Image (tube, rainbow, N blue to C red):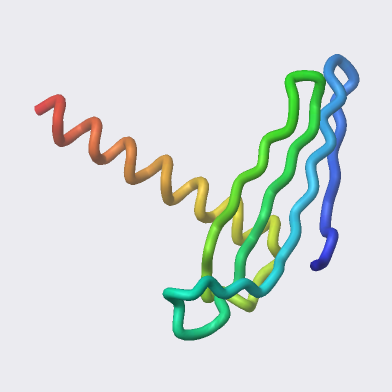
Length: 83
């Protein structure tokens, strides 16, 4: 695994780390690249995972792009169902 980035805020300390690893479950033919975002704060631990084939960017960049894509898909879905 590769540790990439951390951040903190003055009011509420949040430790955020991004990792990449290769992982294979029994139903997958090949190992896949997995991006993990782990946040620890006073509220607890939050672990998020993304499976990707993208090997060209840092784990943090990949995770943030997937989040933006997910937000866009939710926005589109809301627009379709509100019409």
